Image (cartoon, rainbow over the protein chains, first blue to last red):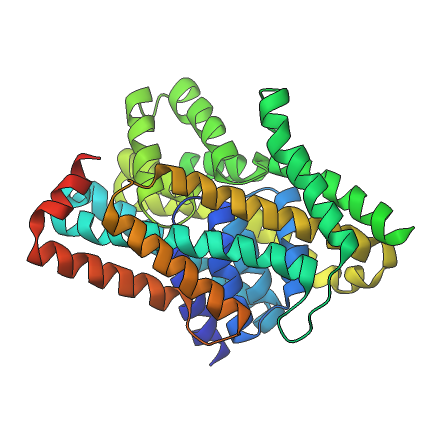
Length: 187
Length: 187
C-alpha cells in the first residue's frame, strides 16, 4: 500500500510541477506533509542536501522520501513516479510534432493551471516565512532572531542583484544562511 | 549506451537544479556531440518550461528520442536519474541522526529561512511572466488566498485539487468564450 501511495504522491508532483526546482517545493511539501512522509524539519534538511548533491532537486527529494518510507523499492518507485509524467509528456509532444502545445484547448488548460501554480507558490513562500517568524496560528510567538535573519537574508539576496548586478546563487544563499543560523542560534 | 553514459555524466556534475543543468546540456549535446542544434535547444527549453517535471529530465527525454527513438529516450532519462538516485539513497541510509547534532540543527534553522525566500523568489519570477489579464490574475489571487488559508488553518485541500479546479474553470471559460483562450495563445 505504501508503494502505491508513494507512486501516486510523486506522480502528482511530477505532473503538476511547472517552473523549476523551487517552484516544485511547495507541491512536494504539500504531498509529503499530507501523507506524513517527512516533517517540515526533515524537508528543509533534504532541500539543503539536494542543493549540495548533484542532480535535479525533485528527483533527490523523491528518492529520499521513498527510501525513508519503504527502503530501496520505495526509493525506486518514488523516483520513477516523479520522472514518468515528464517523460511521457515529452514523448507525446515529439510524436505529435509539437502541435499539441499549440492546440487551443491544451493552451486553455495551461493558461488556467499556470497562474494557479504561481498563486500556490507565492502562498507557500509567504506562509513559510510567516511560520519561521511567528510560529503557527495556534501557537503564536514572535521569533525575533528569525525576523532579523529573514530581513538580513532577503536584503543580501535581492540586494546583490542591484549592487553586484549578479545575483547570489541559491547555493550561495543557503551557505550564508547556514552560517547565519549557527551564529544566531548557537551563540 | 552512449546516451546513458553522457546523461549520467551530466546528472553527476550538475548542482543546483535545472537551470544550472541547461548550460551543461547545451555544452555537451550541442557543442561537443552535435546531437541537436542550438535552435532545438532553445525549443526544448521553452517546451521544458511549459510542461511539468524537472527541466533536465525533459531535455534528456527529448535528446534521447531525437537520437534513437523510444529506447534512446529511455536510456537518456535513466542515465540522468541514476547519479542523484544513488547518492541520495546512500545518504538516506547513513545520515539519519545527522540532524540531532546541535550546530547542524542551528544551520538548518538558518537554511529554512533561506528556502522560504527562494520559494518566494521563484513565485515572484513566475508572477512577472503571468499575462496581466483578468482571468489569469483572478485564478492567481484565488489560488494564493486558498492556499494561504489552507496552510494557516491546516485545512485539507491539496494544491493538486486547486490546480485541477483551475484547469477545469479555464477550459470551461474557453469553451464558452473562445477569444479569451486565443489571446492567451498569442502571448
